[in-house]
Image 1 (tube, one colour):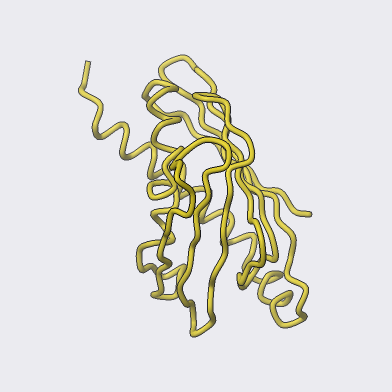
Image 2 (spheres, helix red, strand yellow):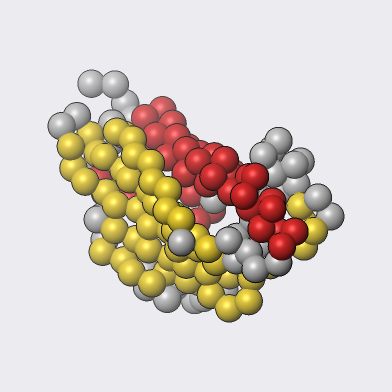
Length: 164
C-alpha cells in the first residue's frame, strides 16, 4: 500500500476549514472540471445516501477518461466534527491507476489559522496494463489531487475572509 500526505496553513477557523473540506463537491472539484490532468475529461458526482455528511455518507463518481469508463463509490467511514474525516472506496471500482483508496483529512488549530493535512493510501490495480499506468502516473496524480484539495480550500476560504 502506498501513502501520500500534504498539508497547508489556511488563514481561517478550524470549523470553516472542516465545513469546506467536508463537502465532496468542493474537495472533489478538480475531478468534476475538465483539466489537463484529467486529459480533458471530467467526472460526475452523485450523492447516494440521504445524509450528505457524516459516517455513512456515500457518493458515486462516474464518467470516462481517455475513453475508459470510470465508476466508483466512496463512503465516509470516520468523522469527528471539525477534527477528522475519512472515506474510502466501497464496492467494485472502475479506476485507471488504483484498485482502491482511502483518504482522510485532519484539521488542527494553529497560530494564525488552521493546519489542514490530507492523505491518501492506495493499492495499485491488478491488471498488468493498469499497473504500468499506475507506476507511471499514480504518484503524480495523487500529488495533484491532494494539492488541489488543499489549495482550493485555502483559496476559497481566504478570498472570502474579510481583512482585519
